[in-house]
Structures are given as C-alpha cells and as structure tokens.
Length: 195
Image (cartoon, rainbow, N blue to C red; front, side, top):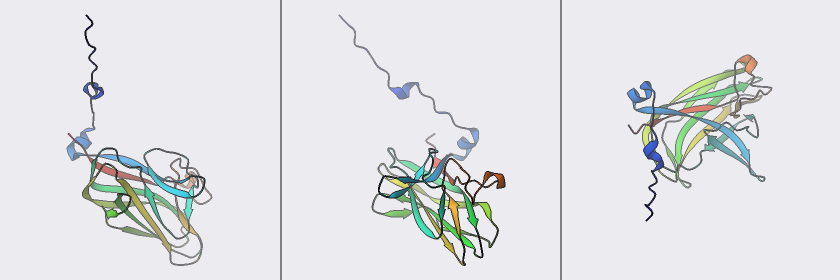
C-alpha cells in the first residue's frame, strides 16, 4: 500500500523579514516609477515597481497625465506620507508649476488618496530634482483596483519645460547625471504592514 504524499503549502516555509524602522512605524515603503509605454497604436503611461526603459525619457510642455499601476491581486492599505522625487527642467522665460496627486482607480472612478501638491520651479534655472510630500488618507486598495499618479505641469511664460519619466535614469539634453539631476521619477509609497 502506498502512502499519500503530503505537499506543504509554499507559505509554510517562508519567513517575512522587515527592518526595525518598518516594524516601529508599521509601514513599509515601495518605490514606484513612471514610464511611457507604447502598444503599437497609442502611448500609455504606467506606474511600475520595475525599471524598464521608457519609450520617451522626457514628458515635455504643459500636460495632465495619469500614470497607472497594474491592478492589485491582493488588497493593500496605503498609510502615511508618500515621497515624490521628480526631475524637472525649464528654459527661456517661464516658471514651471508641477502638481501631483495620488489616487486609486477602479477602471471607472478615481478616488483621491492625497491632496494635490504643487511646487513652482523658477525662471531660467535649468534643471533640478523636486521632492514633494504627499500626505495620504489611509485607504484600502482592493483586489482589481490600481494606483494612479496624476501629474500636471503648467507654464506661466514662453519656452519649454517638462519632467523626467525614465526608470533607467538615462540622460537627455535637459536632465543629466552630470548636473546631479535624474530623469527617473520615483514615488515611495508607504503600505501598512501585516505584522
């Protein structure tokens, strides 16, 4: 007589480990990057934890773009303050106003989980990395929902301006590592840990 084989569940042998700081705060940060993709017909704008090469390194001029993550397979809770690090540039005689807001998206409806935070980057100053704090409303992202980072740029003069959107941080004519400015826009989002 053959005895049945008992297979262990994969989770029985795993151990979750967290840093002391994550345990003390009850949250863990996950870095997300913005990028431009292309499906053969139209450009799409994604929010990803991977670091692919973006179709275009920069997003220039005035725009209002939603960068969407893929849908969540498990519910997660966002809690705390997200940190958005964004490389921007201007030229000529203008100020560039960058506004960012984090939302959850169910495929139909956007729900704000942060306020819209803005910063103005001054005339003829070239390039810089801005750091925006986005205080979050504690929110559950349900299975099948996604995160959305809405970025709006406006100019109050003539010339050119924009942001970096390349997770690989490639140099462009406007954003260069030699000037300590990256084209990789990153948002560190705090998620509640299940301790």
